[in-house]
Amino acid sequence: MELSASLAAWSVLLGCLGLLVSNVVYNVLAHPLKAFPGPLAAGASTWWKTYIEVFKQKSMTDVLVELHAKYGDVVRVGPNELHFAKPSAFNDIYNASSRWDKERTLYESFGEDHSSFGLRNYAEAKQRKDVLQPLFSRRSIINMQALVREKMDRLAETLSKNNEQGKSADLLFAFRCFAIDTITTYCFAKSVDAIDEPAWQAPIVVAMDNSLPTFHVFKHFPIFRKLIFSLPPWLAIKMSPETAGLTHLQVILGEQVREVSAHPERLASSPHTTIYHRLLDPEAHKGRPLPDATALYEEAQTMVFAGGVTVGDALSIGFFHVLDQPGLLTRLRAEVCTAWPDLDSPPKLEALETLPFLTATIKESLRMSPGASSPLLRIVPPAGATISGRAVPPGTIVGMSTVLVHMSPEIFEEPTKFKPDRWLAPDAESLGPWLVAFSKGPRSCLGLNLAWCELYIVFATMLRRFDMSLDGTTAEDMVWRDCFTPHFPRRHLHAWCNPQPKI
Ligand code: HEM
Image (cartoon, rainbow, N blue to C red; front, side, top):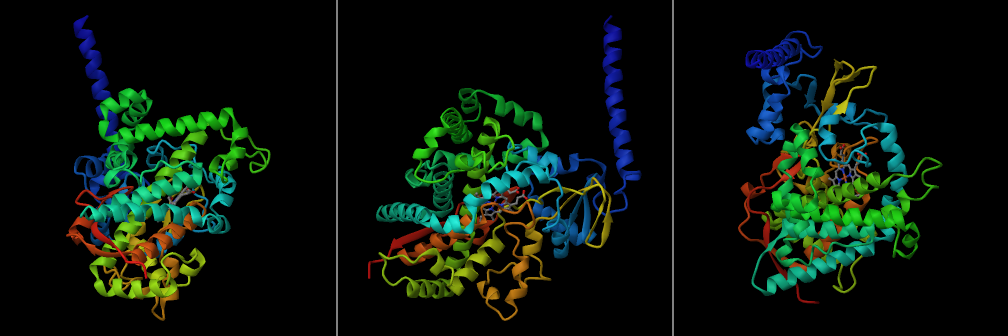
């Protein structure tokens, strides 16, 4: 009996090993991508990526840069995955007529499969985005700009108080708190009031930051993700106290969704249109079924993540460079002060948008700060595709990180330098199409008008209301690790923010 049990165990083990070996042999010798260059281990097994991202904890964008330097413009980074380096490849993959699906392993790891971001299929995502788009249109943002200003004013008050106490400010967290309060108020008409937390250590912001490195574990080990997400909140908090803020957010959003689902009529008393008004409007869905509670919840979570981290990062990176180059700071302040002479009468967004140097600085901040640093993986459709001049078989996973476009010396002279003037040079028009921070095509960013509005209002207000200087932050502190969005593991951007006297 004992003998037959151990024989069975051995047979299973040997069977698995045989399968593994034959898979590796197939990937290396017979796979349709076998002719593409790349590390042997990457072509042999998806474990190569797991090893790099989870065990070595390297930043995949750095690894990709090294691989392209070694292997050329197209690199096989997985048995069925290619990454591209030539900027033109970005247009081949992410263009207006491209209807390619998002890739499963990457996008399922967010646990937002029923949201505008997580729906992998083009047609389903389009329907959802069409429903939400009016809320994020330019007109809607123009009408709602007072909400963004209100959050900025609140942030300015807390920055002044912090300064009175003789402290510099953790601007990464301060800006992320601003972005979280803005997005939650904009989307749900309810703020999480992160700005008011001492030293901007809001539990949700701290937890989102702590959870960034876990993203790779969730991606490579989906079982672990499912286990964590299925735990009751009290147990999830006990097992992972550092991400308790996320569990609290899940509870808050869950309650919100239960409330709007049970009492949609209460939406009538909301101070402004929210995502729930759009998502529960039968007319917006043109006769199609309304999203269920799961979809409502995941859409809400998507908004918090998509709007909460990206804007804060762009501001943090932008301000580091501006404060690091006193000449830039002086020019920017002079421009903003001319357009904003009376401190109590801030200009409208439309007026800020006409300021050339401010606009150029925001563009440069977006170029240097990847909202999504990882390659945005897509599946080549059944007809196959030509990318970077190479025929790519159907079903291949393809991607290109925006970092490789923004750091391409082919497009941007001295790409690693923060130079807003490049956007004002005579040939600046030719650069425009290569600013791909919000991606391109049908799966590009839904929130880009809101993001631009936030960037204009925060940049202008910080420059006008504060005398700012770095508190010891160095370029090394700003080095990030690719965790889909950047994760800043070192000391965050710290700056002195001394309120300007009213003039
Ligand atoms: C500086 C700020 C921002 C940057 C750089 C940025 C960047 C991006 C990028 C690169 C994508 C494409 C992701 C992919 O292909 O998987 C994206 C998608 C998305 N963004 Fe943003 N984003 C920003 C702010 C926002 C804000 C404020 C919102 C709030 C509504 C938002 C909502 C979304 C949504 C819902 C998607 C999914 C679109 C789709 O998959 O079709 N983003 N964003």
